[in-house]
Image 1 (cartoon, rainbow, N blue to C red):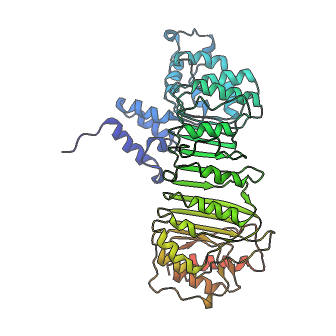
Image 2 (image 1 turned 180 degrees about the horizontal axis):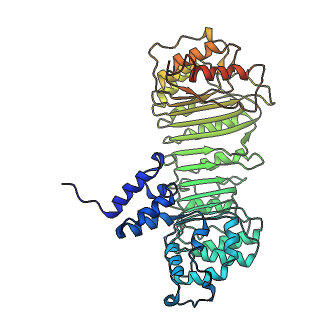
Image 3 (image 1 turned 90 degrees about the horizontal axis):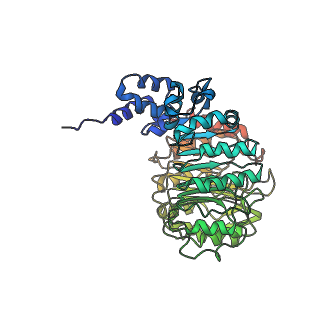
Length: 503
């Protein structure tokens, strides 16, 4: 006989059914999607469901007005004793205790700042905290009054907070004060994300239980050394110090548990030489994800020797599952070698964005890479060649690479690359039994002639079942050699025309 389900398990199944199909399997993910009216109705179904349903309803507080509405208008004149609290105020305290995630942005801060005396009295019944059980807190925008900042954060920061995000504040002294407050109050923070750290007068020393740390500003050498000593740190996203950090870190003992590293560069383009020394301090066995990237800039390198040194250093991390590298040559860099990466036998996702860099890769090299990466599911090689807009050079890969991907990369589902598709007649014919495992192709900015039909026919034959990603071409393009209309016609022929999946 099957055991009887517990009430929480029954409720979980109901919540999964209420949530959209792509957001099922967890209360935390479902609670942000389920209509509040559905949860409220579920809470009124029976007394057994009331508490669990209300917990989910209030778990993620997106609008502070719902909570403030629980307070009576005359609450400020009511005595602070629990026995004398009005029913509405008791409801405020009960619902505030349910909140686990909260985002204090500028509008919320202004509302709370105007009610601080009232909230302080209400929080008296919750151990002096507005949300005594809050676990995930984001403080996005400041309020300008320093005293209000201290009082407000005092109501929000509690010992149960384990995930905290603090945005960049224009007033540095407030930012430093808040971080000190966090260090003394939130002693169990495991996931910390900050936009910036004070240059002086602050240390990361209180944070010894960090599992995840993100900082969008350049770290000091001391901060890097402290992070390197943390035994539980697994995910790190930083802008490394400009100087060589290897002398400040204990080689082979740094970052003992790190499995995901994202190295960003700053607005000025970063300092490429600091990356390789940082990588050499890491264990080559534990790291599974490495990203060298930034949404606003790229790491710049002066010559091919620096880039090849980076590639060879990366190849030492034999357990990598995901690799993303975005680099830019300050001048035209030729013959970037990729063959050392063939040692990454467990690689599943590869993203290379090379600007002013010519990779040493051709169609005939792909079978060897396919044999070296049996688990690869995503291949992305974006090759922007040329120092000026409109001056683009062809890549080493042609449209003939598609049959190679289909034949030698059995698990690849998505391919993004810039290919030379100008001479389709000279390419070997795709196999009549081409595999259909590739589902998505992003070939925008590929070199193409004026006739889209041969190109579309070749793509459909090489990768049957694949769909071309549609959209704008990149900013760097030569309209004479990259005819936009011809490529749009290829997309239509492959996705919806006579070469589409339905024909």
